[in-house]
Length: 315
Ligand code: UD2
Image (cartoon, rainbow, N blue to C red; front, side, top):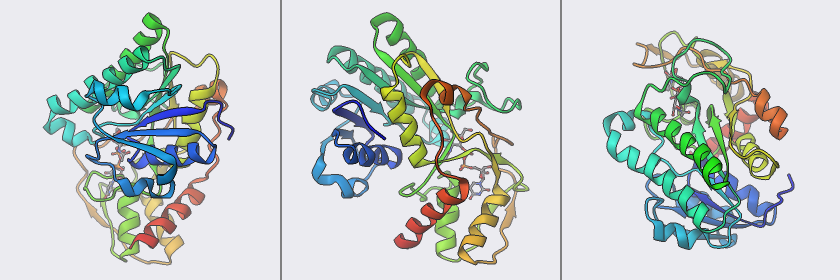
């Protein structure tokens, strides 16, 4: 993928998605700055590119840290966030400080220091539990958690910065992202990271509910593709776009696939449904396809194989 800009800042670049963006940008010969406070990111995530990334340990809420990290950058990929929905329910104020004020500080730094475009990580969480599928960008948002409100607020600010100040902003509504380096350590980590870790240890998973709930799982490298296209495509400023695959898989199918790939024959433990779980989630990706030329390259099986290989290597 040819990258048209020369220097970019990735906030949250030591995290799961940010570190994959860093890796691809470095491979494309781009100069990369990373700003991360290491609250959930890890320096090891950047190990493969550590000599070619300038790392700034700092917080997006700190304008001085942003000023230093953004110098000379044409593009910002804003991945830094407090990503846990349950934590946002427990700590609505402190999560808003990061996800809302932090995002506003990033936009402000972009405006002040001459950044051309900001690509922001948003979330399918903003759609809430409206049963209409697939999700299209025009649907009215129904945020059901502080996290979803905060992501939606970030989108509003992004749109406003485009309209008021001419800053090119593109919000990407990620569906269920998975892949190497996703942290499996909390019960609210992504289901794939949890299942991978259990499979590597030959332990059965817990499935909440009947397992027939489905998700649009998108491989992290395809999310990187969407980010780079969002940074480079002329005229995409002011947009908000779904990033998924347009296909969904049930949790039962997911465990079935993991068993097939590993040769395990382990029955899951079915547990009561998780509070607040939505039944179905599926992206309509036509807008990203038409506007950016986004075309997910990894089938579910391919993505899962690559992810499994990584988790197996870790255990
Ligand atoms: C995703 C996002 C979340 C928020 C939400 C909005 C991830 C990791 N989380 O939550 O941030 O945007 O969408 O709707 O992308 N499950 C099991 N067993 C387990 C773990 C999970 O059965 O050990 C089930 C879980 O009950 C759910 C499904 O797997 O039905 C997916 O769970 P998840 O936590 O990976 O993601 P989700 O869609 O709840």
